[in-house]
Image (cartoon, rainbow, N blue to C red; front, top):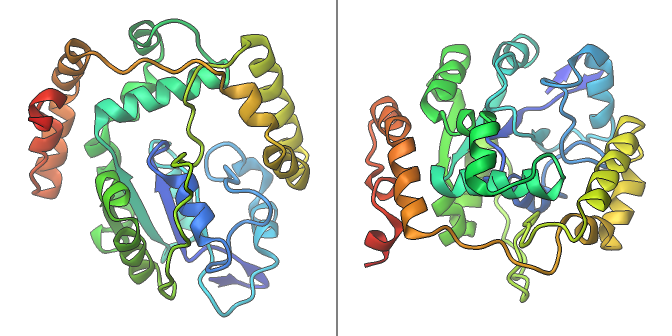
Length: 286
């Protein structure tokens, strides 16, 4: 999409976070024009005051013969829909929804990894209300529908991404105008992109690493951030040798009741069946 001399996105994967956005960004590199050097510009939520020229500078390398896009979890930000609509009225948006219990626990791991929170999952859940806001799928989605209409917003499911990544990618490409392409061979390690398997080995190290990362981001030192990532520094700082415990059956059941109204609201909004998110995990396995 062109606005004067500036290249701007034709599509956005707006999240919410912890729904495969990092994986999607990685596989789209080289097949769409994405922000140069960084996955998320955070323009429409945290950096809007920097102006559209600052945002467009991330796409100055765009070739013009393939779609331009960004994968950034703007989904729960209250102002993002109107800001994007005013600047990019024809932008196509993709939303990916994940089982809210898994989504909440994944967000807890992120908060722990970056030393934004401490304590058990239940303790953090009660003191960090944005975890619950991130699972208010229907209310947030309705704002995007109101701003863009349903035809410009494609709803997808994390289960489809996990079970059939090529099929998920094909559907994403067809909607956004990207030429279909085959996924590379699966990493034999089985490790997911941006996955935190265990709490940080040191909360102070994780906190200092987060400050350093954000200091570098503010100065657009993206190449240095990426080099440190390839060297394994961020993984060392944010994820330790111990594993997060699995949720117990009791925890799972309590959380399914907690998020049941949200699941039913999404069913009503989309006219779909989400009974798989209502049954306790043991019942689904059986």
